[in-house]
Amino acid sequence: MPKGVPRARMRVYNELLFNNLESFLLACFPVCRKLLGARIWKRLVRAFFAQHRCRTPLFRQIPEEFVQWLSGSPVEMPAWLAHLAHYEWVELAVDTSPAVADAERIDPAGDLLDERPVLNPASMLVAYPYAVHRIGPRMRPERPDDLPTQILVFRDQGERVRFIVLNPVSARLIALVGTGEVTGRAALMRIAQELRHPDPDAVIAGGLQVLRDLRAQDAVLGSVQRDRP
Amino acid sequence: MHGIDVQGAGLGLRRELIPALRAGVPPAIQFFELAPENWIDLGGSSGKALHHFSERYPIVCHGLSLSLGGPAPLDEVLLGRIRRFMRAHGAHLYTEHLSYTTDDGHLYDLLPIPFTAEAVRHVAARIRRAQDILETRIAVENASYYVAAPISQMSEIEFIGAVLDEADCWLHLDVNNVYVNSVNFGFDPVAFLRALPAERVVYLHMAGHYRESDDLLIDTHGAPVIDPVWSLLETAYDLVGVHPTLLERDFNIPPLAELAEEVARIDRLQRERVPGDAQAHRRRG
Image 1 (tube, each protein chain N blue to C red):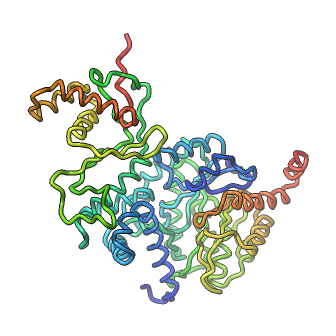
Image 2: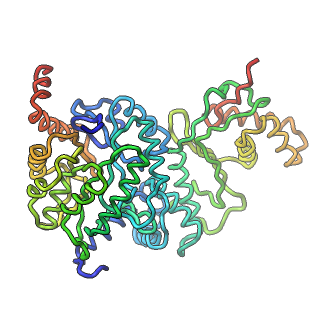
Image 3: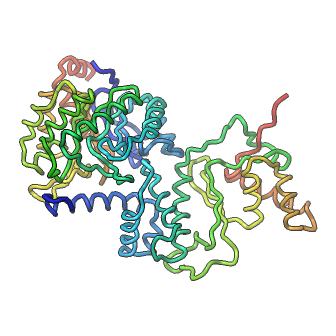
Protein backbone atom coordinates (compact mmCIF):
# COMPACT_ATOMS: atom_id res chain seq x y z
CA MET A 1 0.00 0.00 0.00
CA PRO A 2 1.33 3.48 -0.86
CA LYS A 3 2.49 5.51 2.15
CA GLY A 4 0.23 8.34 3.27
CA VAL A 5 -2.97 6.77 1.94
CA PRO A 6 -5.81 6.01 4.36
CA ARG A 7 -6.43 2.27 4.67
CA ALA A 8 -10.23 2.68 4.47
CA ARG A 9 -9.96 4.51 1.15
CA MET A 10 -7.63 1.88 -0.34
CA ARG A 11 -10.16 -0.75 0.69
CA VAL A 12 -12.73 1.02 -1.51
CA TYR A 13 -10.54 0.28 -4.52
CA ASN A 14 -9.90 -3.32 -3.45
CA GLU A 15 -13.62 -3.94 -3.27
CA LEU A 16 -14.55 -1.98 -6.40
CA LEU A 17 -12.03 -3.76 -8.59
CA PHE A 18 -12.77 -7.23 -7.26
CA ASN A 19 -16.57 -6.85 -7.37
CA ASN A 20 -16.43 -5.40 -10.86
CA LEU A 21 -14.30 -8.24 -12.21
CA GLU A 22 -16.41 -10.82 -10.40
CA SER A 23 -19.63 -9.37 -11.88
CA PHE A 24 -18.41 -10.08 -15.43
CA LEU A 25 -17.59 -13.67 -14.43
CA LEU A 26 -20.81 -14.27 -12.47
CA ALA A 27 -22.84 -13.29 -15.51
CA CYS A 28 -21.12 -16.02 -17.56
CA PHE A 29 -20.47 -18.84 -15.07
CA PRO A 30 -23.57 -19.31 -12.86
CA VAL A 31 -23.23 -23.12 -12.79
CA CYS A 32 -19.52 -23.06 -11.85
CA ARG A 33 -20.27 -20.56 -9.10
CA LYS A 34 -23.13 -22.66 -7.76
CA LEU A 35 -21.15 -25.90 -7.73
CA LEU A 36 -18.08 -24.39 -6.10
CA GLY A 37 -19.98 -22.47 -3.44
CA ALA A 38 -19.35 -18.85 -2.46
CA ARG A 39 -16.08 -19.34 -0.58
CA ILE A 40 -14.19 -21.42 -3.14
CA TRP A 41 -15.60 -19.34 -6.01
CA LYS A 42 -14.29 -16.12 -4.44
CA ARG A 43 -10.91 -17.72 -3.84
CA LEU A 44 -10.81 -18.77 -7.51
CA VAL A 45 -11.70 -15.26 -8.74
CA ARG A 46 -9.07 -13.75 -6.42
CA ALA A 47 -6.45 -16.13 -7.82
CA PHE A 48 -7.47 -15.15 -11.37
CA PHE A 49 -7.21 -11.46 -10.50
CA ALA A 50 -3.82 -11.91 -8.84
CA GLN A 51 -2.18 -14.30 -11.33
CA HIS A 52 -3.60 -13.40 -14.72
CA ARG A 53 -2.93 -10.27 -16.78
CA CYS A 54 -6.02 -9.63 -18.90
CA ARG A 55 -5.20 -8.57 -22.46
CA THR A 56 -8.66 -7.75 -23.83
CA PRO A 57 -10.12 -4.24 -23.58
CA LEU A 58 -13.60 -5.69 -24.32
CA PHE A 59 -15.60 -6.65 -21.24
CA ARG A 60 -17.45 -9.59 -22.76
CA GLN A 61 -14.10 -11.26 -23.50
CA ILE A 62 -13.07 -11.36 -19.81
CA PRO A 63 -14.78 -14.79 -19.42
CA GLU A 64 -12.70 -16.09 -22.33
CA GLU A 65 -9.52 -15.02 -20.54
CA PHE A 66 -10.81 -16.76 -17.41
CA VAL A 67 -11.41 -20.00 -19.34
CA GLN A 68 -7.93 -19.87 -20.88
CA TRP A 69 -6.36 -19.24 -17.49
CA LEU A 70 -8.38 -22.06 -15.91
CA SER A 71 -7.33 -24.55 -18.61
CA GLY A 72 -3.72 -24.15 -17.44
CA SER A 73 -4.71 -25.68 -14.04
CA PRO A 74 -3.40 -22.67 -12.10
CA VAL A 75 -5.08 -23.76 -8.84
CA GLU A 76 -6.25 -27.00 -7.23
CA MET A 77 -9.80 -27.49 -8.56
CA PRO A 78 -12.03 -30.41 -9.62
CA ALA A 79 -10.87 -31.77 -12.99
CA TRP A 80 -14.23 -31.07 -14.64
CA LEU A 81 -14.29 -27.39 -13.68
CA ALA A 82 -12.29 -26.06 -16.63
CA HIS A 83 -14.51 -28.01 -19.05
CA LEU A 84 -17.72 -26.83 -17.41
CA ALA A 85 -16.45 -23.23 -17.49
CA HIS A 86 -15.59 -23.62 -21.18
CA TYR A 87 -19.08 -24.95 -21.87
CA GLU A 88 -20.68 -22.00 -20.05
CA TRP A 89 -18.45 -19.58 -21.96
CA VAL A 90 -19.38 -21.16 -25.34
CA GLU A 91 -22.98 -20.07 -24.80
CA LEU A 92 -21.85 -16.44 -24.37
CA ALA A 93 -19.45 -16.67 -27.33
CA VAL A 94 -22.15 -18.01 -29.66
CA ASP A 95 -24.80 -15.61 -28.34
CA THR A 96 -22.62 -12.59 -29.13
CA SER A 97 -20.68 -13.91 -32.15
CA PRO A 98 -20.43 -11.31 -34.93
CA ALA A 99 -20.22 -14.08 -37.56
CA VAL A 100 -23.01 -13.86 -40.14
CA ALA A 101 -23.56 -15.95 -43.24
CA ASP A 102 -23.47 -14.37 -46.68
CA ALA A 103 -27.15 -14.88 -47.63
CA GLU A 104 -26.37 -14.26 -51.30
CA ARG A 105 -24.25 -17.39 -51.38
CA ILE A 106 -26.78 -19.70 -49.75
CA ASP A 107 -29.71 -21.58 -51.22
CA PRO A 108 -31.85 -22.34 -48.15
CA ALA A 109 -33.67 -25.11 -50.04
CA GLY A 110 -30.51 -26.38 -51.75
CA ASP A 111 -29.52 -30.02 -52.15
CA LEU A 112 -27.70 -31.13 -49.00
CA LEU A 113 -26.17 -34.24 -50.61
CA ASP A 114 -24.86 -33.02 -53.94
CA GLU A 115 -24.05 -29.43 -52.96
CA ARG A 116 -21.90 -28.20 -50.10
CA PRO A 117 -24.02 -27.70 -46.95
CA VAL A 118 -23.44 -24.38 -45.14
CA LEU A 119 -23.01 -24.67 -41.38
CA ASN A 120 -24.39 -21.71 -39.43
CA PRO A 121 -21.29 -19.53 -38.82
CA ALA A 122 -22.61 -18.46 -35.40
CA SER A 123 -21.87 -21.92 -34.03
CA MET A 124 -19.23 -23.95 -32.21
CA LEU A 125 -18.69 -27.71 -32.26
CA VAL A 126 -17.19 -28.67 -28.91
CA ALA A 127 -16.01 -31.92 -27.29
CA TYR A 128 -15.49 -32.59 -23.58
CA PRO A 129 -14.23 -35.60 -21.59
CA TYR A 130 -17.29 -35.19 -19.33
CA ALA A 131 -21.02 -34.83 -19.96
CA VAL A 132 -20.73 -31.14 -19.12
CA HIS A 133 -24.38 -30.46 -19.95
CA ARG A 134 -25.47 -32.79 -17.12
CA ILE A 135 -23.07 -31.57 -14.43
CA GLY A 136 -25.01 -30.18 -11.50
CA PRO A 137 -25.25 -30.30 -7.72
CA ARG A 138 -26.15 -34.02 -7.92
CA MET A 139 -23.84 -34.93 -10.81
CA ARG A 140 -20.19 -34.23 -10.11
CA PRO A 141 -18.21 -36.65 -12.27
CA GLU A 142 -15.36 -38.49 -10.58
CA ARG A 143 -13.56 -39.56 -13.75
CA PRO A 144 -13.79 -38.83 -17.48
CA ASP A 145 -16.32 -40.81 -19.53
CA ASP A 146 -15.18 -43.48 -22.02
CA LEU A 147 -16.39 -41.40 -24.96
CA PRO A 148 -16.20 -37.62 -25.28
CA THR A 149 -19.42 -35.59 -25.13
CA GLN A 150 -19.77 -33.66 -28.38
CA ILE A 151 -22.16 -30.73 -28.61
CA LEU A 152 -23.11 -28.33 -31.37
CA VAL A 153 -23.92 -24.88 -29.98
CA PHE A 154 -25.47 -22.44 -32.45
CA ARG A 155 -27.65 -19.34 -32.72
CA ASP A 156 -30.91 -19.86 -34.57
CA GLN A 157 -32.68 -17.36 -36.85
CA GLY A 158 -34.54 -15.99 -33.82
CA GLU A 159 -31.09 -15.24 -32.28
CA ARG A 160 -31.57 -17.85 -29.54
CA VAL A 161 -28.69 -20.10 -28.53
CA ARG A 162 -29.43 -23.81 -29.01
CA PHE A 163 -27.55 -26.97 -28.04
CA ILE A 164 -27.56 -30.36 -29.76
CA VAL A 165 -25.79 -33.30 -28.10
CA LEU A 166 -24.38 -35.36 -30.95
CA ASN A 167 -23.55 -38.99 -31.59
CA PRO A 168 -20.02 -39.58 -32.95
CA VAL A 169 -21.15 -39.91 -36.58
CA SER A 170 -23.19 -36.68 -36.53
CA ALA A 171 -20.29 -34.85 -34.87
CA ARG A 172 -17.89 -36.09 -37.56
CA LEU A 173 -20.36 -35.07 -40.28
CA ILE A 174 -20.66 -31.55 -38.84
CA ALA A 175 -16.88 -31.25 -38.53
CA LEU A 176 -16.44 -32.22 -42.20
CA VAL A 177 -19.30 -30.02 -43.44
CA GLY A 178 -17.99 -27.16 -41.29
CA THR A 179 -14.88 -26.95 -43.47
CA GLY A 180 -17.18 -25.65 -46.24
CA GLU A 181 -15.25 -27.73 -48.74
CA VAL A 182 -17.23 -30.94 -49.18
CA THR A 183 -20.63 -31.96 -50.45
CA GLY A 184 -22.86 -33.87 -48.06
CA ARG A 185 -22.36 -37.01 -50.13
CA ALA A 186 -18.54 -36.73 -50.11
CA ALA A 187 -18.54 -36.20 -46.33
CA LEU A 188 -20.74 -39.25 -45.76
CA MET A 189 -18.74 -41.45 -48.15
CA ARG A 190 -15.65 -40.56 -46.20
CA ILE A 191 -17.35 -41.38 -42.90
CA ALA A 192 -18.50 -44.77 -44.31
CA GLN A 193 -14.88 -45.48 -45.26
CA GLU A 194 -13.59 -44.42 -41.85
CA LEU A 195 -16.15 -46.73 -40.21
CA ARG A 196 -15.44 -49.51 -42.75
CA HIS A 197 -19.22 -49.63 -42.98
CA PRO A 198 -20.58 -52.58 -45.04
CA ASP A 199 -23.44 -50.47 -46.48
CA PRO A 200 -22.31 -46.93 -47.45
CA ASP A 201 -25.77 -46.18 -48.90
CA ALA A 202 -27.27 -46.65 -45.45
CA VAL A 203 -24.74 -44.17 -44.03
CA ILE A 204 -25.66 -41.68 -46.75
CA ALA A 205 -29.40 -42.10 -46.16
CA GLY A 206 -28.99 -41.67 -42.40
CA GLY A 207 -26.65 -38.71 -42.85
CA LEU A 208 -29.07 -36.94 -45.16
CA GLN A 209 -31.72 -37.18 -42.47
CA VAL A 210 -29.27 -35.68 -39.96
CA LEU A 211 -28.49 -32.77 -42.33
CA ARG A 212 -32.21 -32.15 -42.89
CA ASP A 213 -32.84 -32.09 -39.15
CA LEU A 214 -29.95 -29.67 -38.69
CA ARG A 215 -31.39 -27.44 -41.41
CA ALA A 216 -34.85 -27.52 -39.78
CA GLN A 217 -33.24 -26.19 -36.58
CA ASP A 218 -31.08 -23.50 -38.35
CA ALA A 219 -27.81 -25.27 -37.51
CA VAL A 220 -27.34 -25.78 -41.26
CA LEU A 221 -28.53 -22.83 -43.32
CA GLY A 222 -28.82 -24.53 -46.73
CA SER A 223 -26.24 -25.29 -49.37
CA VAL A 224 -23.82 -23.16 -51.34
CA GLN A 225 -25.64 -21.43 -54.18
CA ARG A 226 -24.71 -23.04 -57.49
CA ASP A 227 -23.37 -20.47 -59.95
CA ARG A 228 -26.15 -19.44 -62.26
CA PRO A 229 -25.42 -19.80 -65.97
CA MET B 1 -18.47 25.92 -32.46
CA HIS B 2 -17.56 22.27 -32.33
CA GLY B 3 -18.88 19.73 -34.82
CA ILE B 4 -21.07 17.78 -32.43
CA ASP B 5 -24.46 16.71 -33.75
CA VAL B 6 -25.86 15.63 -30.38
CA GLN B 7 -28.39 17.80 -28.57
CA GLY B 8 -30.63 17.71 -25.55
CA ALA B 9 -30.86 14.88 -23.04
CA GLY B 10 -29.82 11.28 -23.52
CA LEU B 11 -29.67 7.88 -21.86
CA GLY B 12 -26.91 5.27 -21.63
CA LEU B 13 -27.75 2.29 -23.86
CA ARG B 14 -27.61 -0.98 -21.94
CA ARG B 15 -28.60 -4.47 -23.06
CA GLU B 16 -31.04 -4.75 -20.14
CA LEU B 17 -33.03 -1.77 -21.47
CA ILE B 18 -33.34 -2.98 -25.07
CA PRO B 19 -36.74 -4.73 -24.85
CA ALA B 20 -38.36 -1.66 -23.25
CA LEU B 21 -36.66 0.73 -25.71
CA ARG B 22 -37.76 -1.44 -28.64
CA ALA B 23 -41.34 -1.05 -27.41
CA GLY B 24 -40.97 2.73 -27.47
CA VAL B 25 -38.29 5.35 -26.81
CA PRO B 26 -39.58 8.00 -24.37
CA PRO B 27 -39.69 11.40 -26.11
CA ALA B 28 -37.25 13.08 -23.69
CA ILE B 29 -34.45 10.79 -24.93
CA GLN B 30 -32.80 12.53 -27.87
CA PHE B 31 -29.59 10.49 -28.10
CA PHE B 32 -27.93 7.39 -26.71
CA GLU B 33 -24.47 6.91 -25.27
CA LEU B 34 -22.63 3.62 -25.12
CA ALA B 35 -19.25 2.18 -24.21
CA PRO B 36 -17.61 0.93 -27.42
CA GLU B 37 -15.88 -1.74 -25.31
CA ASN B 38 -19.32 -3.31 -24.74
CA TRP B 39 -20.57 -3.11 -28.33
CA ILE B 40 -17.64 -3.49 -30.75
CA ASP B 41 -18.07 -6.67 -32.85
CA LEU B 42 -21.19 -7.63 -30.93
CA GLY B 43 -23.46 -9.93 -32.95
CA GLY B 44 -26.80 -11.53 -32.20
CA SER B 45 -29.93 -9.78 -30.98
CA SER B 46 -28.05 -7.01 -29.11
CA GLY B 47 -25.93 -6.23 -32.16
CA LYS B 48 -29.08 -5.94 -34.26
CA ALA B 49 -30.69 -3.69 -31.66
CA LEU B 50 -27.67 -1.38 -31.72
CA HIS B 51 -28.05 -0.91 -35.48
CA HIS B 52 -31.76 -0.28 -35.01
CA PHE B 53 -31.11 2.56 -32.55
CA SER B 54 -28.03 4.04 -34.24
CA GLU B 55 -30.03 4.38 -37.48
CA ARG B 56 -32.64 6.44 -35.61
CA TYR B 57 -30.72 8.34 -32.91
CA PRO B 58 -27.36 10.06 -32.58
CA ILE B 59 -24.82 7.95 -30.67
CA VAL B 60 -22.09 9.21 -28.33
CA CYS B 61 -19.16 6.88 -27.57
CA HIS B 62 -17.94 6.93 -23.97
CA GLY B 63 -14.84 4.79 -23.61
CA LEU B 64 -13.82 2.71 -20.59
CA SER B 65 -10.65 0.79 -21.48
CA LEU B 66 -8.34 3.25 -23.25
CA SER B 67 -6.52 4.00 -20.01
CA LEU B 68 -5.45 7.56 -20.86
CA GLY B 69 -3.27 7.71 -17.75
CA GLY B 70 -1.93 4.16 -17.98
CA PRO B 71 1.74 3.14 -17.93
CA ALA B 72 1.53 0.62 -20.83
CA PRO B 73 1.74 1.90 -24.43
CA LEU B 74 -1.48 3.44 -25.74
CA ASP B 75 -3.71 0.76 -27.30
CA GLU B 76 -3.74 1.97 -30.90
CA VAL B 77 -5.40 -1.23 -32.10
CA LEU B 78 -8.35 -0.44 -29.85
CA LEU B 79 -8.42 3.12 -31.18
CA GLY B 80 -8.58 1.79 -34.73
CA ARG B 81 -11.52 -0.42 -33.78
CA ILE B 82 -13.24 2.52 -32.07
CA ARG B 83 -12.76 4.65 -35.18
CA ARG B 84 -14.37 1.97 -37.40
CA PHE B 85 -17.18 1.50 -34.88
CA MET B 86 -17.89 5.24 -34.76
CA ARG B 87 -18.01 5.45 -38.56
CA ALA B 88 -20.31 2.42 -38.76
CA HIS B 89 -22.76 4.07 -36.36
CA GLY B 90 -22.38 7.69 -37.42
CA ALA B 91 -20.98 8.68 -34.02
CA HIS B 92 -18.97 11.93 -33.89
CA LEU B 93 -18.21 12.43 -30.20
CA TYR B 94 -15.83 10.17 -28.28
CA THR B 95 -15.08 10.77 -24.62
CA GLU B 96 -12.82 8.94 -22.15
CA HIS B 97 -12.07 9.22 -18.45
CA LEU B 98 -9.19 11.19 -17.05
CA SER B 99 -7.99 8.07 -15.25
CA TYR B 100 -6.17 4.79 -15.88
CA THR B 101 -7.59 1.29 -16.09
CA THR B 102 -4.44 -0.79 -16.65
CA ASP B 103 -1.16 -1.72 -15.00
CA ASP B 104 0.53 -4.34 -17.16
CA GLY B 105 -2.93 -5.83 -17.80
CA HIS B 106 -6.49 -4.54 -17.82
CA LEU B 107 -8.10 -3.88 -14.42
CA TYR B 108 -11.49 -2.78 -15.84
CA ASP B 109 -12.04 0.00 -13.32
CA LEU B 110 -11.14 3.68 -13.12
CA LEU B 111 -8.05 4.51 -11.06
CA PRO B 112 -6.93 8.02 -10.16
CA ILE B 113 -3.97 9.63 -11.92
CA PRO B 114 -1.62 11.45 -9.50
CA PHE B 115 -1.85 15.18 -10.19
CA THR B 116 1.76 15.81 -11.24
CA ALA B 117 3.41 17.78 -14.04
CA GLU B 118 4.82 14.53 -15.44
CA ALA B 119 1.31 13.02 -15.55
CA VAL B 120 0.00 16.12 -17.37
CA ARG B 121 2.58 15.60 -20.13
CA HIS B 122 2.02 11.83 -20.27
CA VAL B 123 -1.79 12.05 -20.43
CA ALA B 124 -1.85 14.99 -22.83
CA ALA B 125 0.48 13.21 -25.27
CA ARG B 126 -1.79 10.15 -25.23
CA ILE B 127 -4.91 12.29 -25.77
CA ARG B 128 -3.24 14.01 -28.74
CA ARG B 129 -2.29 10.63 -30.21
CA ALA B 130 -5.87 9.39 -29.74
CA GLN B 131 -7.17 12.51 -31.48
CA ASP B 132 -4.79 11.87 -34.39
CA ILE B 133 -5.97 8.29 -34.82
CA LEU B 134 -9.67 9.11 -34.42
CA GLU B 135 -9.19 12.18 -36.65
CA THR B 136 -11.34 14.25 -34.33
CA ARG B 137 -11.02 16.18 -31.12
CA ILE B 138 -12.11 14.12 -28.11
CA ALA B 139 -13.47 15.05 -24.69
CA VAL B 140 -12.04 13.83 -21.38
CA GLU B 141 -14.17 13.34 -18.29
CA ASN B 142 -13.33 14.49 -14.78
CA ALA B 143 -13.25 11.18 -12.88
CA SER B 144 -14.43 10.31 -9.40
CA TYR B 145 -11.74 9.12 -7.01
CA TYR B 146 -11.32 8.01 -3.41
CA VAL B 147 -7.61 8.32 -2.73
CA ALA B 148 -5.51 11.47 -3.10
CA ALA B 149 -2.08 10.45 -4.36
CA PRO B 150 0.57 11.54 -1.84
CA ILE B 151 2.86 12.55 -4.74
CA SER B 152 0.33 15.02 -6.23
CA GLN B 153 1.79 18.47 -6.95
CA MET B 154 -1.42 20.32 -7.80
CA SER B 155 -5.17 20.29 -7.23
CA GLU B 156 -7.61 18.33 -9.40
CA ILE B 157 -8.88 21.51 -11.05
CA GLU B 158 -5.34 22.63 -11.89
CA PHE B 159 -4.57 19.20 -13.28
CA ILE B 160 -7.66 19.14 -15.50
CA GLY B 161 -6.94 22.64 -16.80
CA ALA B 162 -3.32 21.78 -17.59
CA VAL B 163 -4.26 18.56 -19.44
CA LEU B 164 -6.96 20.31 -21.50
CA ASP B 165 -4.54 23.06 -22.48
CA GLU B 166 -1.65 20.79 -23.36
CA ALA B 167 -3.82 18.25 -25.25
CA ASP B 168 -6.09 20.90 -26.76
CA CYS B 169 -9.12 18.69 -26.16
CA TRP B 170 -12.64 19.17 -24.83
CA LEU B 171 -13.99 18.63 -21.32
CA HIS B 172 -16.74 16.15 -20.61
CA LEU B 173 -18.09 17.45 -17.30
CA ASP B 174 -19.49 14.79 -14.98
CA VAL B 175 -21.58 16.76 -12.48
CA ASN B 176 -22.03 13.82 -10.12
CA ASN B 177 -18.28 13.25 -10.03
CA VAL B 178 -17.73 16.89 -9.02
CA TYR B 179 -20.21 16.39 -6.18
CA VAL B 180 -18.78 13.00 -5.10
CA ASN B 181 -15.22 14.35 -5.06
CA SER B 182 -16.28 17.52 -3.25
CA VAL B 183 -17.65 15.41 -0.38
CA ASN B 184 -14.81 12.88 -0.40
CA PHE B 185 -12.14 15.59 -0.35
CA GLY B 186 -13.99 18.47 1.30
CA PHE B 187 -14.05 21.19 -1.34
CA ASP B 188 -16.74 23.56 -2.63
CA PRO B 189 -18.29 22.06 -5.81
CA VAL B 190 -19.53 25.43 -7.06
CA ALA B 191 -16.06 26.96 -6.74
CA PHE B 192 -14.79 23.95 -8.71
CA LEU B 193 -17.32 24.62 -11.50
CA ARG B 194 -16.36 28.32 -11.54
CA ALA B 195 -12.70 27.42 -11.98
CA LEU B 196 -13.33 25.12 -14.97
CA PRO B 197 -12.47 26.36 -18.46
CA ALA B 198 -16.12 26.78 -19.49
CA GLU B 199 -15.24 27.23 -23.16
CA ARG B 200 -13.92 23.66 -23.35
CA VAL B 201 -17.07 21.96 -22.00
CA VAL B 202 -19.06 20.11 -24.69
CA TYR B 203 -20.93 17.37 -22.86
CA LEU B 204 -22.25 16.56 -19.37
CA HIS B 205 -23.05 13.49 -17.28
CA MET B 206 -25.55 13.04 -14.49
CA ALA B 207 -25.72 9.99 -12.23
CA GLY B 208 -26.59 8.68 -8.80
CA HIS B 209 -24.08 7.44 -6.23
CA TYR B 210 -23.91 5.38 -3.04
CA ARG B 211 -23.46 7.01 0.35
CA GLU B 212 -21.05 4.84 2.31
CA SER B 213 -20.66 7.38 5.11
CA ASP B 214 -20.93 11.15 5.69
CA ASP B 215 -17.55 11.75 4.09
CA LEU B 216 -17.37 8.91 1.58
CA LEU B 217 -19.55 8.69 -1.52
CA ILE B 218 -19.04 5.92 -4.09
CA ASP B 219 -19.75 6.71 -7.74
CA THR B 220 -21.85 3.61 -8.46
CA HIS B 221 -24.37 4.83 -11.07
CA GLY B 222 -26.76 2.58 -9.17
CA ALA B 223 -29.32 4.99 -7.69
CA PRO B 224 -31.46 7.99 -8.70
CA VAL B 225 -29.75 11.41 -8.95
CA ILE B 226 -29.98 13.23 -5.59
CA ASP B 227 -31.26 16.81 -5.19
CA PRO B 228 -27.88 18.48 -4.46
CA VAL B 229 -26.60 17.07 -7.78
CA TRP B 230 -29.68 18.35 -9.62
CA SER B 231 -29.07 21.82 -8.25
CA LEU B 232 -25.38 21.52 -9.16
CA LEU B 233 -26.47 20.76 -12.74
CA GLU B 234 -28.46 24.02 -12.79
CA THR B 235 -25.42 25.88 -11.53
CA ALA B 236 -23.28 24.17 -14.17
CA TYR B 237 -25.66 25.19 -16.96
CA ASP B 238 -25.57 28.77 -15.69
CA LEU B 239 -21.76 28.78 -15.52
CA VAL B 240 -20.65 26.75 -18.57
CA GLY B 241 -23.77 26.87 -20.73
CA VAL B 242 -26.28 24.23 -21.79
CA HIS B 243 -24.70 21.20 -23.44
CA PRO B 244 -25.99 17.74 -24.31
CA THR B 245 -26.38 15.86 -21.03
CA LEU B 246 -26.64 12.16 -20.37
CA LEU B 247 -28.18 10.18 -17.54
CA GLU B 248 -25.96 7.23 -16.56
CA ARG B 249 -27.44 4.20 -14.86
CA ASP B 250 -25.38 1.02 -14.73
CA PHE B 251 -26.63 -0.92 -11.69
CA ASN B 252 -30.02 -1.54 -10.01
CA ILE B 253 -31.58 -0.58 -13.32
CA PRO B 254 -35.23 0.41 -12.76
CA PRO B 255 -38.05 0.29 -15.33
CA LEU B 256 -37.41 2.56 -18.33
CA ALA B 257 -40.24 4.90 -17.26
CA GLU B 258 -38.32 5.82 -14.08
CA LEU B 259 -35.17 6.61 -16.02
CA ALA B 260 -37.23 8.56 -18.57
CA GLU B 261 -38.46 10.84 -15.74
CA GLU B 262 -34.88 11.75 -14.87
CA VAL B 263 -34.00 12.30 -18.53
CA ALA B 264 -37.11 14.49 -18.87
CA ARG B 265 -35.96 16.54 -15.88
CA ILE B 266 -32.64 17.20 -17.63
CA ASP B 267 -34.59 18.16 -20.76
CA ARG B 268 -36.76 20.63 -18.79
CA LEU B 269 -33.75 22.28 -17.13
CA GLN B 270 -32.14 22.71 -20.54
CA ARG B 271 -35.26 24.24 -22.13
CA GLU B 272 -35.71 26.70 -19.26
CA ARG B 273 -32.30 28.10 -20.16
CA VAL B 274 -32.50 28.15 -23.95
CA PRO B 275 -35.32 30.65 -24.65
CA GLY B 276 -35.68 30.08 -28.41
CA ASP B 277 -35.92 26.38 -28.01
CA ALA B 278 -38.27 26.68 -25.08
CA GLN B 279 -40.65 28.81 -27.15
CA ALA B 280 -40.57 26.28 -29.94
CA HIS B 281 -41.39 23.64 -27.37
CA ARG B 282 -44.37 25.65 -26.08
CA ARG B 283 -45.68 26.20 -29.59
CA ARG B 284 -45.57 22.48 -30.25
CA GLY B 285 -47.26 21.83 -26.91
